[in-house]
Length: 604
Image 1 (cartoon, rainbow, N blue to C red):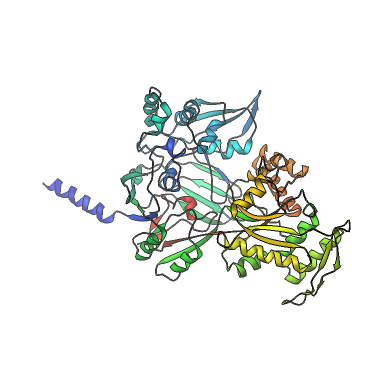
Image 2 (cartoon, rainbow, N blue to C red; image 1 turned 90 degrees about the vertical axis):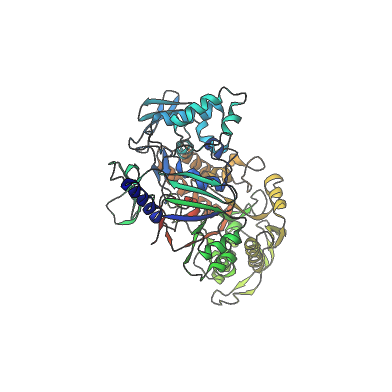
């Protein structure tokens, strides 16, 4: 009887002291099957609740630095005969939540299953790259590649999610005996082991999904592991429990951030809401601690939460940008000084801070500053720091330099901060003496994107003030896409891109082999020096070499200006101060870390 009472008291104590946080999501999860999760079942909600539990060989820290995850180090790409190989040494201290050790068997099984069964889905694309994946020993695996596509290998193949082979192997073997093996495998709704202490618990469709701690702290291999950031970019991983250590850069500098691995909560409940307004009200009422939303809050929604008790609003740059593109196949867009003159007129700080009232962040390059490893901070926009009058003056001088003339040359007083254009330009003529034709700037309208529409209105007026015959056409988004990407029939347009953290998109947007309509190079930009840098980036022997190439590519783009990079949207998020995240200032926001399941703390 005494033992029963003690047992009951323990259960009561555990229930009293169990730590729970509540997140809001906007749809049910649709699958618990990793093969489907990274295929047709990919969704923001599925990823937020589950994807973080699977390991990969390599990863990136918050600064975008490549770091080992399940590997012990960053492996080297080596030429062997007619193949390129990567030999990966694995950590020996990692354990799946079912207690099985993480080994080379898990790695080989994952890659071979994807290839042999032809698992569909773009998120599995990295597993298709190697010709062969071979187990060397329990803690070593070797990849063989036909091509030396360094960036693809490191940032796609070696970042593929890995599954627990001793759990999945019998299921996959059974799948192979079915009439439609892949369909059968993807239809299995199971909760498999993860590499974390947390895993899926109760699922109530239309109501909530529960994630619970399933490995005690004292048994969890990663509990207490630290990620340490140093001034100047140094970084360390230190696991005091297992003794694993890895570092890169100067780790003798002062520590700027230390992130300790938990989990520090026993349960995370993801409550399903039909719409954002209901979730916002739940946040205000304290029913949830954080709203997970990949697109963040609108300015109006943020205003609604502003000043609410115990709620913190954070703003971070997104992975994406708005831009103005020139059709360099046509005059005068094919004249570099003309493009530079338009760029000189555009005061991004004024647009973002005054016109758009802080709802946008000015950008100088296609790499956001928060993506610090790839961002070239030395690149400046043309006219940066100048007054509007000085910008007009610079634009006029650039046009003159290229041989442009006016019937009535603009007269500028740079000291007049209110009305610097004393005489507007009229009758702009090219270097050949012929009038510059009326040009059209295409932009989405106010109903689709008021930020782009308002920006375009200012650009039109600034250009006209110095005699550039530019007419704005606010039009349907699809019309712009058709004219730019299919017909390639435009003068200038304003659109936006979502981008990846690793700037492989430089090739897609501006390499001469990617010309629209077959590719995404709508400006028709062709610069052999730029092309060579992109190829150097793709086939680099070291990451420093790749970084150096992208730094130089950013400099060239800022001078040649096939695009004028305008701004990015901040990602606005909100959470209650009853919880604490390891950090909340980073590229792509808290949602990019799925709300830190193993790092979030409940503030007592």
